[in-house]
Length: 377
Ligand SMILES: Cc1cc2nc3c(=O)[nH]c(=O)nc-3n(C[C@H](O)[C@H](O)[C@H](O)COP(=O)(O)OP(=O)(O)OC[C@H]3O[C@@H](n4cnc5c(N)ncnc54)[C@H](O)[C@@H]3O)c2cc1C
Image (cartoon, rainbow, N blue to C red; front, side):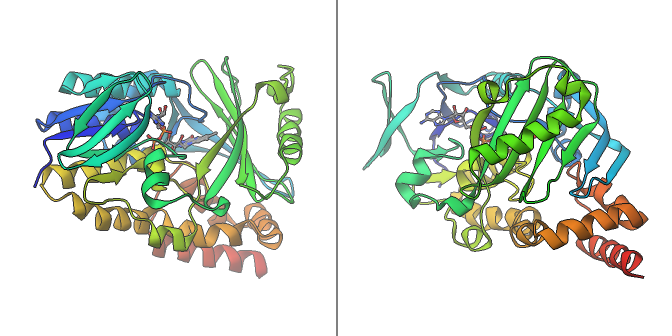
C-alpha cells in the first residue's frame, strides 16, 4: 500500500530529490533539514552519468564549471594530462542544495528548517520529534540524513570504522586555473584532489578511516599544494581551513548485509552507504537511490526498494569495494605508474574512468589486459 504522508529526514541530494519525486506524484511530503542549503564538505563533482540519467538536472549546468582538462599524478611522479569530451561539472553544494530544494518546494513538498532529534513508532505510523519542540505524525519515514544517519544508527546499528573514508578538504573562495587533478602518493591508500569550480576551488585528501593520523594526511595535502604554484601562491593555512568529514566506503560484506527498508522506514543516499568506496563520489548514487525509493513508494510496494538498491550497488559500487584495496597496494600503485608511462590502453582507460565514466566491464578487462601486456612485454 502507498503511504500517504512521508517524512524525510535530510534535504541533501537524496532527500531533496525524493521529496521532489514524491510530491510530484501527489503524496504529502514533510522534509526536515536544519542546515540546507549549505556548503557541506564536498568537491561537488557531477559526472556525465548523472546528466545522462537525470536530464531534469540540466539547468544546473549553467551554475557549474565544466571541467574538460584532467591531470593524474602517480606515486612515481608520472603525469597524465588529457581532455575529455564529457566534462565533469563542479557545482557548489549551496547551489546544488538550493536548486533541488526549489524543485521539491515547487512540486509541493513542505519544508521544516529543523533537526530531527528522535522518532518513535506508534500505531498510526511514526512520530518525528524535532529540536524546536515540533512533533509530526507520518505514515513512512526516510533517513536521507547523510553518512552519520540517526535513522540508520537507531534501526540498523552503527557501522565499523572500516566502512568509512576520512577526508580533509578546503573550499578556496576563488577559481584556480589548473586542470581537475587527482594525485597519488606512495604510502597513501587514497588520493588528493583539486576540483576547480566557477568561483571557488575544492582541494582535499581522502583515505580509509582509522588508518592514518591527521598529521600524515595534512603532510600529503601540503605536498600537493606545494607542487602546484597556483595553490602554493595562495598561502593557505591548511590546518586552520581544512574541514574533516566522513564518507561511506562500505566493504563488500557490508554492501551485501545492509538493510535499507523496513515496515515503516527506508534509507537513501549516504545514509544507506550508497557512495563509491574508492572515489568517494556519492551525489549521483544519492539521487539514484532516492529515485529508486520514490519508484517503489509510488508503486505501493516500498519493500521492493531493497532489491533495487542492491542491484544499483552491484552495478555501480560493490566491485570497487573489492578492487579498491588491491589498487592501493604499493606494488599495484607502481604498476599503475608504469602503465600510465608506457601503455596507450591504460591511459585511455584511466581517462574514461576518472571523470566518473562507466564503460562496460568486459571493455575494461580487455583494456587492462592489453595495458598489462604493453608494460610487461
Ligand atoms: C570532502 C568530500 C568531497 C566529496 N566530493 C564529492 C564529489 O566531488 N562528487 C560526489 O559525487 N560526491 C562527493 N562527496 C560525497 C557526497 O558529498 C555525498 O555522497 C552526498 O552528499 C550524499 O548525499 P546525501 O543526500 O545522501 O547526504 P548529505 O549530502 O550528507 O545530506 C544529508 C542532509 O541531512 C541533514 N541532516 C542530517 N541529520 C539530520 C537530522 N537529524 N535532522 C534533519 N536534517 C539532518 C544534513 O544537514 C544534510 O543536509 C564528497 C564527500 C566529501 C566528504
